[in-house]
Image 1 (cartoon, rainbow, N blue to C red):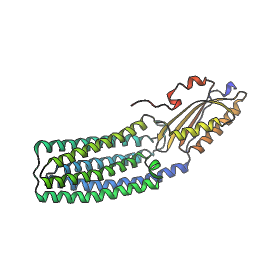
Image 2 (image 1 turned 30 degrees about the vertical axis):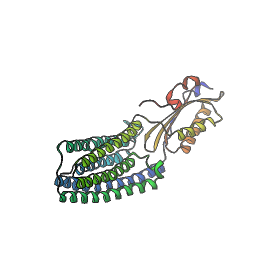
Image 3 (image 1 turned 90 degrees about the vertical axis):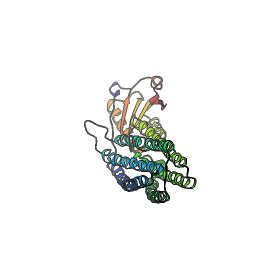
Image 4 (image 1 turned 90 degrees about the horizontal axis):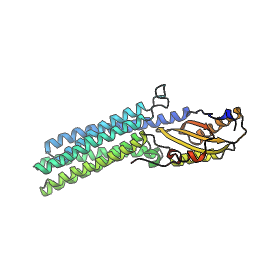
Length: 338
């Protein structure tokens, strides 16, 4: 290999058509988030008033759940707006990871405002007891019935968008949409738990049923917050591209007649629909510098066509022994951390 060819590197970026498609998807997601926000704001007020009137711990837990969801929708709206900002000198790879950051805040909000308050309400009900009148039960169940319809409608809207964006596998890649689906699904299940607890309290006169419903709602919210937070964490700290996409890139590189060996392949998601690709390759001997540049540009364009989300592609031409590069977990695809 010509010494002039060593260290040849460069990049290609995504097309305007891909960016336009992403913005259309964002507009649909924004509508879904706004529908969920409007439903949660109305429901939160109704649940809070009903819970205070009826003295129901389960209903107050659901009110806290709706308040947490409302705050999270505001976070998600910020994520949608800020993550599409163009790259600049300070952030040369763009602001795509903003979406992951705000989704992490949403998960923290679910845990603190929803889960912890629900646990508190359940424990407080077990400690002090509760005395509700028939009118309080009826008012609480009516509020929860209306909430079930509203939350169910919001969930159907979110699931409809997921189906329109390729089903569960592709539609739930968007952390904003994934969070809305998780929140609405959890809300529907939480309302059912609260209704069951109130009904059993009314029939048996034992507050333990309603307290257990609050504790169950708290446990559900903590679990959902953990799952959402873990996914956002993985994406924030630099998650690799899907194995299938990495496999296609590696196969494409190995198929090039000018490449003697692929010594390392590194990928990292820099946004919802953007991935950074860096490959260390060894070219066959005898290529002059002009030929190396031509080959590099052709390979990078091929990668961008094969994997549309590969917005930045870097090639490093080197003669580093493959056995040394193979030891790198990033190059082999091994995972680390908890």
